[in-house]
Image (tube, rainbow, N blue to C red):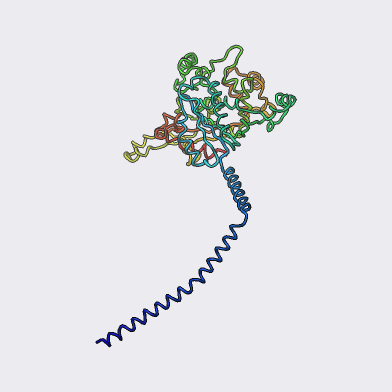
Length: 441
């Protein structure tokens, strides 16, 4: 038994010896690997002794190029959003978010907050100066700006027009006295006349439901329903409700020696270069509700005369719920009328048209002449509304007509077109999309 045990143990012991010898050979090979590591360490030490000036220069150049790239990629276009009467910066919450989502890498959005709530009763001129001061502050603390645009709702459009006249810098304003005389006497071309706003290039001037021709008579204030006696009383009592702004809107602030403010704002005068500043913009667009806007009439917001009001095509719209519940023929008469959109993508945009300048080339840039003299040369009319219209249409505009007819939010069209509160005015989202898609960056 002992011999058998020795025979069985011997092979096991031999295996253990073989394993130990293999381990021994492995340990003998380790120093060679350590030698290679030492060589690598020497190479690393030699590299570490190289002067760091080259690497520092490389890093600094990389940082400079990265800074330049980030500067180039940073937005350089400032968009100022201006609220209407009794409004605030929160009115642009939805629109600002949409602009940031679609144009955030190119446009800096600033919602004006200097004229809110009852501050909108102080008058167009005072609000315009406040807005101009606010824009100056934004431009001064935002480096890298090159362009500027305005998007204004309702009364904000008039405020923006006043503000840009205070920010406008003519191209030749810093030249010699002889050059300034050429500017006044119209001896320079249109390109030379176009100036800047605080050194920034004006691009887009967009108004939404803005009473450019005021709110005086002719159904310009729709909730008065065109009742003549109410339209005559309104200019006399408006200032009791909305202060000095009421006088400006109803053109009741004029006197024998002074034209109403809105009329002065259709020319260049001592108070400001109103038309020159407006001319500086590459695009001037007026969005207007054709119906259901109880605050601002279609003509005053779209710069139209009575004779220019055209019949918009209509089509029947069957309410889906009615069709589903009542399929009998006698119930199919329960339909509403809805204007035909130009593009299914924008169901409430029913008309877009370019309005060329109504004056010839020789008079288009006579912007320093008083409106009264201009009217005597080109029209025979005593209507102040006509004088405002002629003054503004010296420049080219684009009209965009909007209709919410058939929408359950049509009765709030004045706010719906702006999407003032999304849960209440969401049907105007396509109008905001149209503005963004046609916004030149």
